[in-house]
Length: 144
Image 1 (cartoon, rainbow, N blue to C red):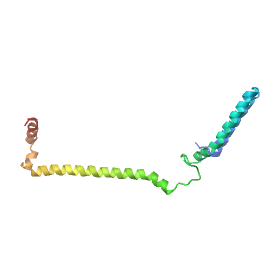
Image 2: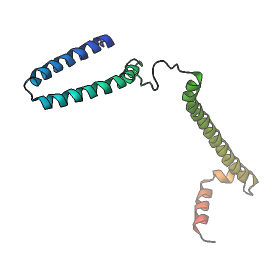
Image 3: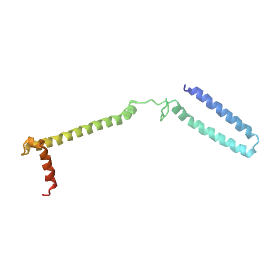
Image 4: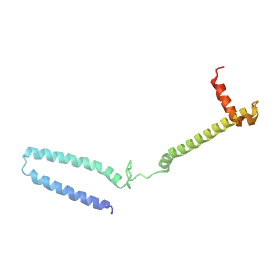
């Protein structure tokens, strides 16, 4: 399936507009004069609005599928590119900082547990004893 070019699209739109205009013009011959004058005035207003909005339509249509603000004659400067990339850089730096803080916190918690184990009065073999975990559960449940 091929995409029609911009020229083919414009030609199809022009042909469609001419057919609609011809049908409206045929029906316009039987209208009273005051209605035809109001329609002519409305048509002139619509054409004036179309001419002012044509530049924007061209900028969007030829923008390569992306909406361009400002028009075609403006080139993308390195400031605009930097402004587009800066939020991505800030996000990556933030994620790296969060990861480093979480690693540091985990290391501190493990160091506290290791220090508590090494400074305790019990021998290390007592922590491996299954009865010791039961003793801890019972001692925590009793009020002091």
